[in-house]
Length: 134
Image (cartoon, rainbow, N blue to C red):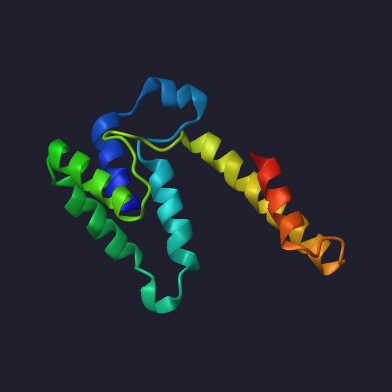
């Protein structure tokens, strides 16, 4: 699904380098989806992971689809996991997503330390900590 999203964002954002991206440090369109796909792929059990070649092959296959097909298929893919997004929806920018991932990692490490030190024991307290993140 994220590879499909990356292909859509590349098609919507264009494959040509954007001068704004060069000054802001934002990479190409679809980078957020590709990074998330890679992160999720590495955390899957070995029998479910895809090789880099398979991921690239999927991206190239989706890249051959028309924009209309990409819009339809991406919308269906999100709907299949009960996360309906409007057609043409794109993920947040790469830098924003990276900051959010770092925030999540920090929260997880802090919660793990608190659980280890027995400072957070109830599920309710853990959920409250997560909800503070926003």
